[in-house]
Amino acid sequence: MKRNRAALVTSVSTAMLGAGWAAGVVGTAFAAQDPASTATLGAAGTQSSSVETSTGASTFPSAAPSASASAPAAAAPSSAPAAPSGTFDGATTQTRYGNYQVEITVAAGTITDISMLQSGSSDGTSRQISGYALPRLISAVLHKQTANVGYVSGASYTTQGFETSVQSAMQAAGLA
Amino acid sequence: MSVDVRVPITGDTFADRVRTDSAWRDTLESIFWLSGVGAVSLMLATGAPIGSFGDALTTIGRVTGIVAATMMMVQLLVIARVPFIERRLGHDRAAALHGRLGRIGFIVIFVHVATLVLGYAARTNTGWWDQAWAFALRYGNEMTIAVIGFWLLIAIVVTSLAAVRTRWRYERWHAVHLLTYVTVAISIPHQFVNGTTFSGVATTPTDTFARWYWAALWTVSVGGFLLYRWLRPLWHLMRHQITVTRVDSNSDGTISVEMTGRALQRMNPKAGQFFMWRFLAPGMWTEAHPFSLSRVPRGNALRITVKPVGDHTAALAQVLPGTKVMAEGPLGRFTTEHRRTHGVVLAGAGSGIAPIVAILEELDSSDPIVVFLRARSASEIPHLDEVRELAHERGATLYLLEGRRGEGWRPQGLTGAMTEFVPRIAGSDIYVCGPAAWAEAVLDEARACGAPQEHLHYEQFAW
Image (cartoon, rainbow over all chains, first blue to last red; front, side):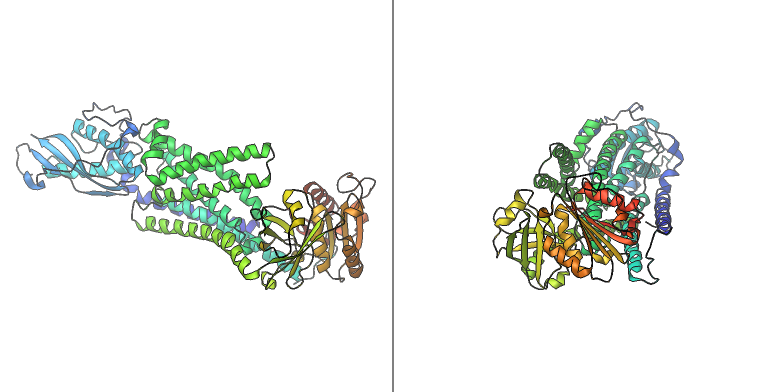
């Protein structure tokens, strides 16, 4: 190829890749800006986990158990000073890899259980990543009783979708 | 000390052609290249995290997947025998590019698979073995067949390496090679279902565009391949009805086959070009072979001259007049259309003499012509009477390089540089066709005598 043409193609390529990269950074900026992003959940499950994590790839979790008896989110008035109890649905959080929505069970102001009403896209990648990350996130939230429990590395979208929904459920319960 | 003895006149059509050719070649290359860059950009735009080890490996895996797929698309297009690509890039260069991309592509695909297995394994704390099985079995049918395709590809590569070592017949190797088209075909669904950039898992405008972009690239490449490699030959068979009219066994041992057809001018075959010929006779129709025209096309009549070197070529002597022929072509850039200067040197040996005869016929006497024909003895040169007559009519100087193989391009007993035979070699176009080693020797000699690279015309018979 002639040198000037090669230079042109090279600059066009660089511009295209640069634009793509910039668009990618902007598009995922929300996930990266989360204040808790510095913490990382240990891959081996360093949290004293009460949730049985699935062993890697051997089973993908089926989508979350359907909420059979979910109480209306307004069940507990947030103004009440008494510790709230009941089940509370978080908001549906949209991510690139599908929607996430949690339901938390609260007993006397303590989150005792978290189930997934929506747990991301149903494609193989999303199922495997969520299947790995969600049990870790759930046990971390139960342990720390906060929505910001850090990131599962390699599952930033799942983490973001999950934690945002937990945050809104906790608000609904008057815990946050 | 000028290299170009006959400097082309400004505005000369020869010089224009050189520029147009190179401009089109560069355009083609740029399109191929930027198509791949575009796909990688779209992948980056959908978010390509590299924060953790698993993320970084996954991103590498995604990029290599896109690169490998783009290479496959280019491979399909350059081997599809699209007339435009044949004319501008040349059949042999296109075939060489196809092969080179294939060898690099295999490594890229291997990296794609390895990094994604390790990347997903790291992201989900899974063993790589379990992860490999997860991809094969739990990611849906599209991934399952893609994994099968990957193992099939490995089997093909191993077989091909063994084939090279044990010198398989081309036809056997080619039969195995055709399986790579199966692997390409079954790799396509997983790109649209599991490929995060193109799967439509998200519905942002970028994702939607990426999906259409990828679909368009595959449509053009697979569509072009099917259209030109399959439908066009069938269409030509029906339209041109090429039929064998005469088969001669020549005294030098070669076989001449004359064929006629309808409206062959529309195919526009030129002296020096070749077709992939498929004789629709029992035992022969499964194989297509490249043979050059050994005569300027006369209206609807074509002639090829074949040296019987294998089963197929020997069987040509038994082909009966009336046999139908499928012809893919015309192929190749070995024509007077690609001349750069006003002098011509033609050099042929073995089965490479056939196209030289045709080119000699096409030239007129306005430019100086020198012809070299290499053979063990003059009795082994096909159409020698014809060549002598043509050379006489065109005022061409004919050298018969007879005798056993000597040093370089010369037969034994001959000494001296080529400039002694062709004083103006540096200002001539040099057309060389023959066995690779000999042809290379001629080209080296021509270069040593000062002929610039763009004056050298050489085409290997490449499939």
